[in-house]
Amino acid sequence: MMNKKDHSLLVYPLQYTNSNSDKMDLPQNTGETGNFIMSFKNLNLINPIIRAVTEAGYSKPTEIQYSAIPHILAGNDIIACAKTGTGKTAAFAMPILQLLKKHTPEHKEIRTLILTPTRELAIQIEENLGIYSKYLPLSQLSIFGGVLAGGQLAALRKRVDILVATPGRLLDLVNQRHIDLSKLEILVLDEADRMLEMECVNDVKKILKLVPQKRQTLFFSATMSPDIRKFAESILNNPVEVTGNSVSSKSQRTGAEGIAVSFGDGEELTDLKKIQNLIGLKMAVAQQKTTLI
Image 1 (cartoon, one colour):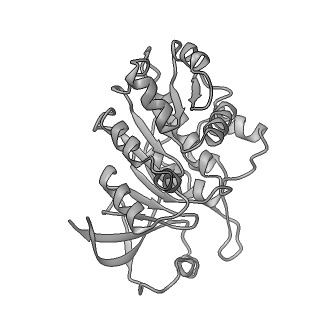
Image 2 (cartoon, rainbow, N blue to C red):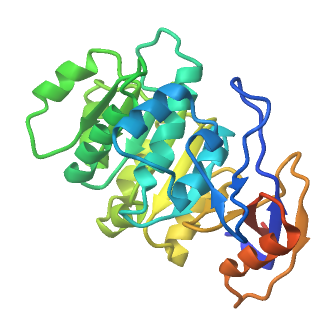
Image 3 (cartoon, rainbow, N blue to C red):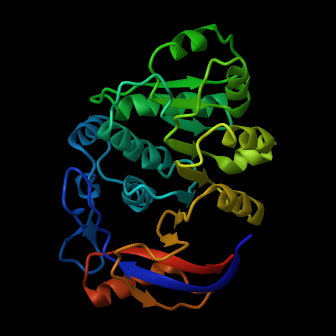
């Protein structure tokens, strides 16, 4: 378990390279103090995704999307505290689609697994993925208990890029050798706190043994108790911590030219807006936690 040593805030330009652009576009200053215009294009999302979400009525990214998407696109593990209704599904779904689109080999194996506690959430996530991937050659499928498995088995015989699953049904089909997770690239735990409350933790641990150690893992939870955090840190690799209005990393980011600003434990992260106003730069903000193993 990690023991906190100190806390600081790292203010750094949120830039990274990808196949579409040399650097990520930063928020554009509107000319009014503390106000910035953010769009999906600024997040370096590809045009097929932007077109799909625009047609679906999305006008601009929410705070959790603005905070998480660049780090997911950069390949970082994520630990995110975000409640339902904040746009968290799109926060992980859109960058996952883009990462999968970047490399689209012929394959039969599942490339991304999204674990979720309930049938209703699994269906909702699959529907959202269908909206965001409207103009992409990617497929998704949800599997869950409480229904006959025949239709799900038939769908699994086709290519599935993204599988959304409840832990119990997933293990049933794995044990029946209908699902192979050995080539998984991205693992998402959505509503992780609910899975732990529903005593799914043992099933999740069994699933973790079936997926590659080398993977990107995204951990989303509406709450972040010490037990949940301890579990998250046990399965994540140097994660970036994300909330609706702040981001923090367990270690210094490679290549980030940062300015460390110390704050007391009780001060609110919203005070960062004052710093941004004083600096006068377009920046994303990360709360950095220096830790000891």
